[in-house]
Image (tube, rainbow, N blue to C red; front, side, top):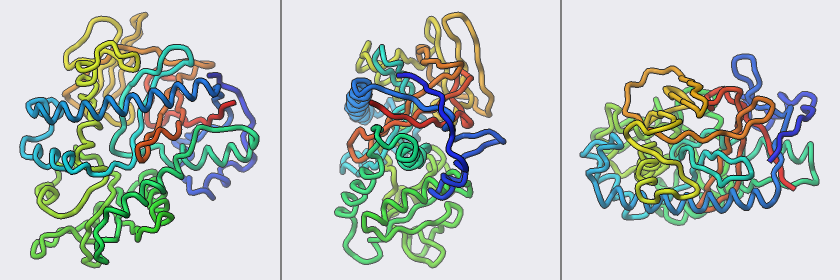
Length: 378
C-alpha cells in the first residue's frame, strides 16, 4: 500500500459533474482528490476482501446475540417499544443492500475495524462510479477493487423478486433530505434500481405524508409507499413525530430495521465481548479503557464529538452537540503518507465484498471534509 502523487485530469471538475458528482469541492477545497492515488498489491486486496467477509459474518452473529439478549438493546438507545419491530425484521430476513466497514490497514498488520456504516450509504457514488472512470481515463491497463455498481444492480434484481406483485407494490421510492450530497447519492442508487428493472421514484423526506384514513405513508400524489430507501438514519427516524406509524404501517424500509443494531457503535462492544482478541477487531467498551483510546458517540456522524488520545499522549477532540452515550475503542494508528492519514472504506453489497474507497486527512480523525482519493492495484 503506497500513495503516489499524480497529475489531475484537465477540467476534472467538469468530468466528474458529468458523472453525477456535484459535491466534489467543499469549503473551497477539493473533496475528490486525484492529485494522488493509492496503489495496492493484489495480495493486499485479497486481505481486505477476506477481512470484510469475516467482519460481516461476525456482525451477523452479533445481531443474533443482541436480539437473543434484548436487555442489551438499552445500550444501543433503542426504545423498548421498538424491539419487536427490529426482531421481526431480522426473523423474516429482510434484505440488506449495502454496508461499509471503515478499516485501518497499512498492508502489514491485519485490517482493524474502526466502525461500521451499516445504514446510510455515504461515499457510495465516489467509490462505485467516480474512481472507476478515473481509472479508465488515467490507468486503463490497471485493475481496481470495484464491482460495486454491478453488485448494486444484482441486489435490486434480487429485491424485485420479493416485492409484491400488485402494481402499486412494484414502486420503489428513494428519499433523502434537501442536501446535495445526500440527493446525488440517493439518485445514484435510484439509477441502479432502474437498471435492475424497478419503477424507482424519488421523494424528498420532508414530502412523505401519512394518510390517517388509509393508514399508509403516501407520496405527493397520495400514492401508497410500500417500499422506500431512505438516506436518513434510523436513530432519527424512530424519534420523529410520525415514528409510531413506521412500526404499524405496511411500508418496508431500506436499510431494514435490524440494521439499526449494526449502524450503532455499541456493536463494537458486543463484537469484542463475543470475539475477544480477534485479529480484525479492536478492544472496545462502554467504559473508559486503559491506554491510548478513542471515545466515540454511539450515533456519531462525520467525525464529530470524538476524543482521541494516542500513544504519545497527543489529544485530538472534535466538536459537536452530543452528550452521550459513548463507546471507547483502543487506538489504532492509521497509515500515514506525507502527513495524510488514510482510512479504507470496504463495501459489502448484496452479500459480497466488492470494492473499497480511501479517504485521507491531515487530522487523525476522518471527518466530513476528509478527501476521497482513488485507488488501483497491480
